[in-house]
Length: 294
Figure 1 (cartoon, one colour):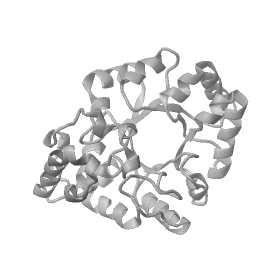
Figure 2 (figure 1 turned 180 degrees about the vertical axis):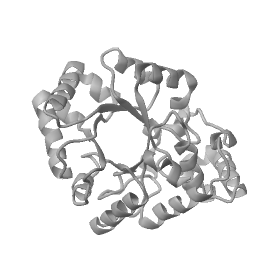
Figure 3 (figure 1 turned 90 degrees about the vertical axis):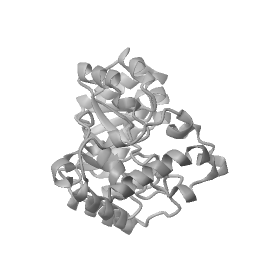
Figure 4 (figure 1 turned 60 degrees about the vertical axis):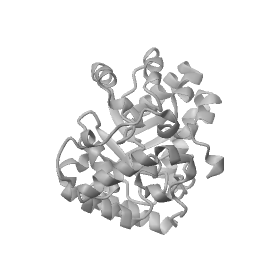
């Protein structure tokens, strides 16, 4: 399966030079991060998706060979709030750290960042395009309700949004119909839901106790198909025709290799139909998690 759809993979940069995810307690060294990037490209990943807020991630990624790779990063909301010129200079700094001539895509961290001053945001995108520093642009979202707010002002080339076995709001037919009509691509992120979907239900933090039965059911389905949740969660999103890119991270090379190995043995198509979705935003929206107790 990996060889058939590896053209969708982007390596998430959140764990490269940074500690990310409520279930991740280890930060990779720069050397380990570089080896992980190299392994990802050997596995067929198209490129990387990172951000300046991910610690040293941009610099670490820039130390690898990104030639002929897709490179996506984000524009700092704080920079955009300071005006067009500061936003433009901040993106140029990202490009310098990444050691590329231009970006495949620049992404606003959130719809709020884009909407703070829509004219500044639009002008920033246009200036980056005029200077041939980016090929496309998009907005990272948490809820489909944000789509219409953006479309009232501009049409991005892509949206980056959570898509996983629990959270299917962005692959609802009404949403995908809108994206098709507007010719907007969908990039899936949060495939593991910050690692929560990969944890053994017995070891999960007490905050997630209300959803232990659901998470246990996910585990049982994966076990019954002879795969880990890592393989099932990724394969379920990869096979979706509505999704053009899938951003996946890894805490180490072993995890990345395990995922690649698992994808060779996916038992069937329409994997999502095997899992029960969850509409409870207290689980599927990490912004609502009480992380102070973690």
